[in-house]
Amino acid sequence: MGVALAGRRRGIRLGVAVVVLALLAFGVVRALTAGATREDTTAAETAEVDRGEVTTEVATTGTLQAAQTRSLSFAVSGTVETVKVRPGTTVTAGQKLAAIDDADAAEAVEDAEAALDDALEALAKAEDDADSPSSCTGGNVAAALQTSYQPSPSPSPSPSASAPPSGSPAPAASATARPAKSAAPALSCSALGSRSGNGDPVLTAEQRVNQARLTLEKAEEALDGATITAPIAGKILTVGGKVGSKVSSGAAFITVADVYDMQISADFPEADADHLAVSQPAVVTLADRPGETFLATVVQVDPVGTSDGTLTRFGVVLAFDEAPAELLVGQSASVRVTTGSKDDVVRVPSTAVHDLSGATGTVRKGGTPTEVRIGLRGDQYTEITSGLTEGDVVSRS
Image (cartoon, rainbow, N blue to C red):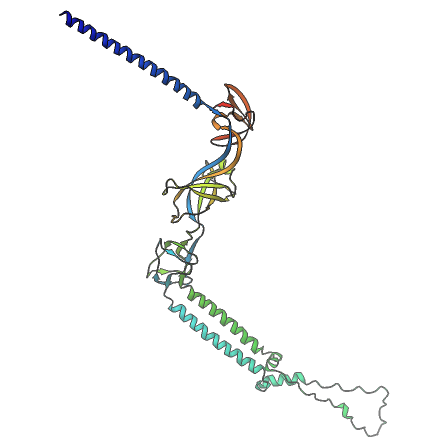
């Protein structure tokens, strides 16, 4: 019995010793961990003044749009005969896209060509007649003779001549007293017709030719307008009808977009737009390509904003530096535009600068508030132009 009691006592002592050792170990670990935590917290609450880059950015979301979009229509009304594309089809410049029944337009061209041939024949005949006086009409000949015949005026009696005495025979009439007929010059039919008031036949024929040529040009344009061809390479966005449907002249039938030169259209609030300018660099991310970024450049900033009653926004257009392939018109994009940047300047985390007033602010250096002058202020870092030197330690917040 004494042996059993002694065994229990040894067990109790051993258990107590284990508990004491465990408590001592826990105390040491906690002390070491607490020290490390305090050091990490202290390091996290302070920052060292260094040199580096400071940038300012503004961000928003936008949509992709084609650099140019064309609405195509038929030049004449008619019934759609063929449609060779559908939305999403990629086309090349000059490719035929759709056509209407052009029978009437082709017939109009033939009639115009025949009318021009007749007008040219009439002009050739009028020019031949103008070069041949023998072909002139009687009325024109008479007019020519009346115009060309100009009798010479009778000579006036000499003042010194005295009247013959009464009863004396009258002197013989002088040959020069009779008006002489001058030979009529050769005149062309066109000249004769003009002098007789009948107009110039050649001029009339030329006017008829000009009118016939104008009519033919219009007819040929109408025939060409019965077929729609792609003016640019790109992708078909919309098709406004199908084979057999009726279309009107000038009504938009097909829309094609240049998807090889896509741009980003975005709106910025006026507070950000005030810092935007053409040629600023930007970074674009697309929802369907996570993890990828694409460089872009601001190419347009609208001078006039639009308001929804509470906020005024300004439109901005950005162009890809190198556009990725297979972009979709209208897909969303996130945009970050760099509005300012400086390299190798003294800087501190932006959260360390407080009490901003114009170009001055306050930082806590060694626990003491210190006034500093600031330059460019970015989202991550702020430039310090005076008041701190590289290597100083300041509070982060």
